[in-house]
Length: 395
Image (cartoon, rainbow, N blue to C red):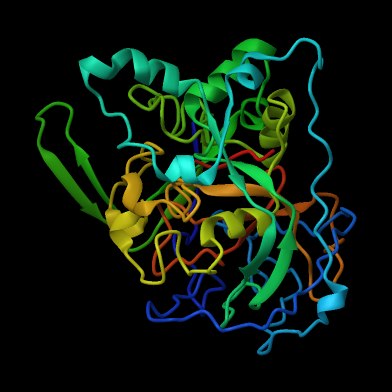
């Protein structure tokens, strides 16, 4: 049974509280060696707004305090440089009995990731290697350094440009796939929030290209805007509802997962969720570029609304041209990704007007329109899930 709710989603326009397009010619502002000290705030409760758009809360429409668009970067003395503390230590079921994913995970240097050959394709010759690759997630080392994060011209929820200091850490080369999440569920019997609730939020893109299963002919559809519905039976196994499945999508990012679900997977795997700053540093590289592939916008290097695919793609679909300077795949488009960073309001404290926390997501998704830089941010309640949201792990 369908319960319709229409929602404007996709890109976030300036007038609608969504993402504003950044000019493709934008250059990163040159910043002195001074860096900003980031404090890890205590998690507090936040305001719940039932009228917020299904595609993402905004300060203007979701009842949250507006983030202040700072025009200048705060200058901090070099002596005040401080390393960002990482999230809490990952939780494992038993340190003496590691689960399969802990054993199969591969930790590699960024240089090795960048020098890898072309990604495996669907060929009989490499079938065995592909099977192994599906269940051996790679984690790329991001070295300790000063990194640029934020935007020189912040739009909507974006943060102002600044420099921060990070410890070295490892980030998943790709988002968590359906295969890996299936392993987690089989091992633990875990039930997701969507399964508990009995529904999922399903987005239908503004434009789609699909194949008619009866005639085999391609069908192009165009609507006025992106629609969002609460669909009974929509879960990670059935992303768009009972009629959908994961057939042919083993290497697509898992969706219909809440922040709580992502944290549960990470704990089981002996991993954690990355902070917003870690995610962005891994995407930008040492030079602080605007996009994983450089400083020029290229819509064909990610699964955005303009691709008119109307659903997720495999995590390696866009190949080596779209990877970050550290060899990280699928950072922009496809699915927005949960982080461990809570949303901070204008006062510097977490919004605290509801019982449900709000977390930051990065990367945009297949319904996101316009130019999407690595500074892009989305905020959602921890008990929110949709067919546009996934996650990746860090160590």
